Every structure is written in C-alpha cells, then in structure tokens.
Amino acid sequence: GLANINGTVQGDIKVSDLQIGPKGNVAGTIEAKVIDVHGILSDNIICHEHILIHRSGNVTGQLDYADIEIERGGQFKGKMVQHPPGQTKSNKEPFNS
Image 1 (cartoon, rainbow, N blue to C red):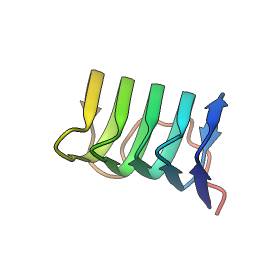
Image 2: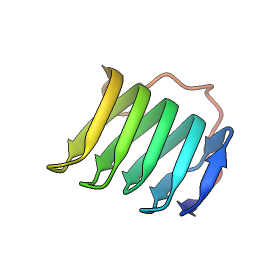
Image 3: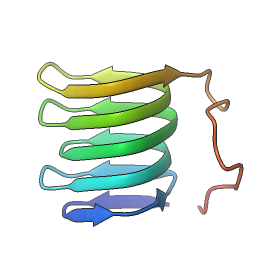
C-alpha cells in the first residue's frame, strides 16, 4: 500500500510505498520498498528498492537500502548499508499490499 505522511509520526511503519511530505516528520523503524522524502525521516530505515531524498529532505540514522538518489540540497547523516534489491535485511514478513 501507499502511505503519504505530512505530519509527525513516531513508531514502526511497514508499507510498500512511503511518501513523506514537506511537513512530514517520521521517526522509528521504517520499512518500505520505495521511499520518497520531502521532509524529515529518522532512526532505523530499511528500503528494499529505491529511496529518493528531495532537496527539502533530511534523513538521519541507519539506512539499509538497495538504491539511493539524493537531490542537490537533500541531506543524509548516519550510517548507510547497501544491499542488492530484495536482499535488504528485514523481519521477513510480506508487505501488505
């Protein structure tokens, strides 16, 4: 499924497609196939396919990813671990579609 967040969320999120709007502030254990960040994302992030940090985006923490794109102005602080697609560490449960 798709989650479009434009407010403050703290906790665990597991979706296939995560979009964080300019006013979004998300912290916790986040797992998704595709992540699109215009706002703030922090803590423990697992991205199975592609993460895009837009110029207004700010990501901090531990990022486990397959493919990343950061626009000029986008920020990342923390630790990155890259895996081939489909091999990112996960709690092995299927995604809810």
